[in-house]
Length: 293
Image (cartoon, helix red, strand yellow):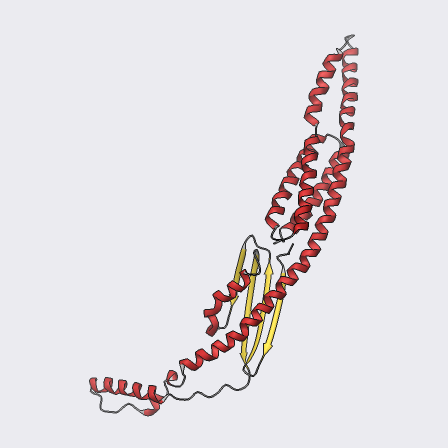
């Protein structure tokens, strides 16, 4: 079981480039990947996205790649063939416009792209990406490891809270018979006081019928059974690991529903107190489950 929160970093340096990669993630309903690359490497954004999706299935992931050139960049060299072709084109235009002055050589040499070779730039970017891609993989691997480490802590906390819920459910089961006994005693006392004052008697069959109706209304055995079953399922899923966050979220909602029913049907201070403890643990579990991949 992995957390969706983590951080990974990888750095590298050679004679040309100083590269730094940071990968961060927080919880998210689905998998969202945001990539920040230098402008000349923007075409590799889809590749970075693929590398992240191959390692994670949920979370909001941010990956930032920074590249700095080391040392002095080689001076650009003019491309003679491109300058000649460009000069001929400008001369053709000059003649069509019937301009007398020839195209000045200084103006021609001031054109930036005549000094840079596109093939050289592409080769430079390709080498930078080759180095950066390895570091992106390392940073993502480190991110996955930190998510796994945090997941261990989450699992430990959830299992401890499930033990607490089981103990509170056992306490409710122990107190449940007392609810009917208390109701029977109070019903007896009220009816005897009311009818005794008028010299009347109530039939035993009527009392039994009233108790049967109340016993059915306050019976919480099914809710306890379902709650315990959900707790065991929760334990199995947590120990199973993998991508389980959505399943845990669903089970938490089901346990909250059963606990609310227990509290409303219990009609006992002890049962209500135990139900409140269960709901407090479920609230903490819900917070943890929302951060599970």
